[in-house]
Structures are given as C-alpha cells and as structure tokens.
Length: 157
Image (cartoon, rainbow, N blue to C red):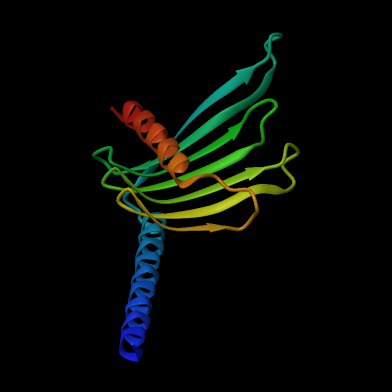
C-alpha cells in the first residue's frame, strides 16, 4: 500500500513539474515576441459616437505581425459607454492562442475588476491565474481571441 502511495506522489510531482515547464516555455515565448525586432506593429482605431455625433468611446487594436502577415500578438483596448474599460492581450503561435492577459477596469478606470492570465497549449488551458475575484472563463477568452485573430487576418490581407 505504501508503494502505491509513493508512486502516486512521484507521479503527481512529475505532472506539476511539467506544468511549470510549460508555463516557463510560454512566458519565454511571450518575452521573445516582445523583443523581436523583425515584427511590425499596426493600429486600427474605431470611435463610438452618441446620437449627437460626440465620441463617447472606442476600440484600438494593435497587431504585431511579421513581413508575411503572420500575427504574433494582438492588443485590444476597449472603452464603450456604460461598460468597463478593458485591455485584452493575445499571443499566438501559428494561429493558436498561447497566452492571454485580460484586464478590465471599473467604470472610472481607477481600479481593476478582472486581472487574469491564461496559458494555453493548443486549445487546452494549462493554467489560469486570477489576481482578482472576478474572472473571465477561459473558453470565452479563447473565443474572443479567435474573433480578434480573424479580424486581424482580414486587415493584413
């Protein structure tokens, strides 16, 4: 019985080490993307106007791509009336979401409501780190990233 316990304990330790290695690999990839000099960033901005034509919000989308149009990172800054301002960061590896950081602020923008990091291996969530009580479901994050990726591909064509 003790032998089985020790085998399970060692197996559990090895699995946790694998997750740590995967997180470290993802963080290394994100840092490499941020430090690459061969990628270029473009920005697309949309304004939201009220009925009087006054600008009351908008969206800024930053895309980091290589010379062939492959998207490595998308940052979306969203500010709409009656909604919390938000920043979404998505990192892709061959069109597959690898890392996401979601930050949503209170309506005045002075405090965070959601502050989470998501680590993906393919479509599988490896780890989610929530620094606030409120959080966004990982599947929702993946779907939002796909929306921005499809949008980004349309603008780079």
